[in-house]
Length: 86
Image (cartoon, rainbow, N blue to C red; front, side, top):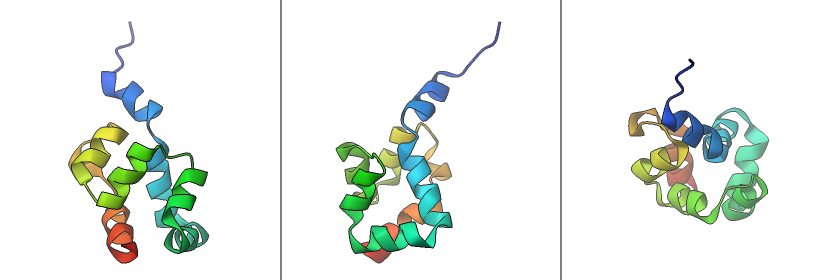
């Protein structure tokens, strides 16, 4: 029987934040939209209020929990964009 880790489902259920961070890392147009109006860009990407607040606060622990990953695995983009934007 295939054993699937519990946080596999959490990561897939709540991966929009991780997808958003990866998009910001790779897509200059997305970064520009984020820098112009971060809340609107995050809402358009489908991030929940909780995900948006975690991102805006720069709380890596909270972001990691929401993404279902270890805190050390939070992309560096999260801190760079947050600090550059806010």
